[in-house]
Length: 139
Image 1 (cartoon, rainbow, N blue to C red):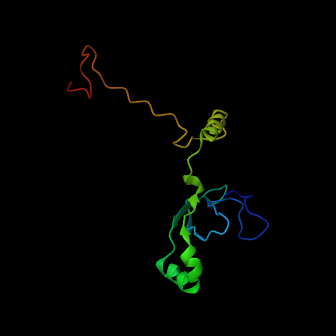
Image 2: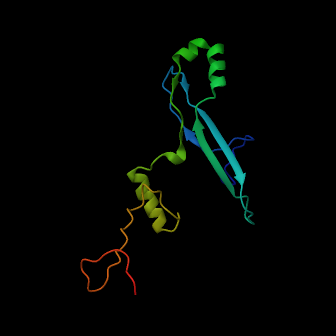
Image 3: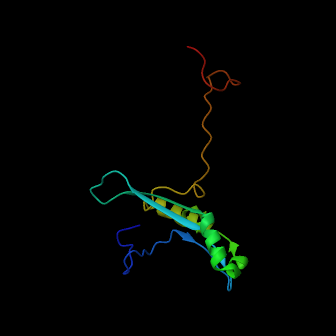
């Protein structure tokens, strides 16, 4: 969340943490969004936060309460949990844009899905021993 990320309503942010889809007439259990923010370190430029965000199913007691209060809706309910925005793998177009931004110095690193495969480490071979590989032996 950035400093200018808040909307004109207190406690409402423009950023999305998760997404879900609904079809007309569907009753969907999208899960329970857990959002925990912890202040870490001190900074002269703001308050760095570490956030833990994850989705779980509703607690069993809540499911039972919903079933008792609205049995017709409970019978129609499907479970399709929301997907965290950070968990979505970028597509090829997004990777191309991120690579261009990295080349311009606008982003520091690429997501794992966009980064080129790491080069295999060079084998440590002894000079004059074409069949030798692995770690050097003795002095």
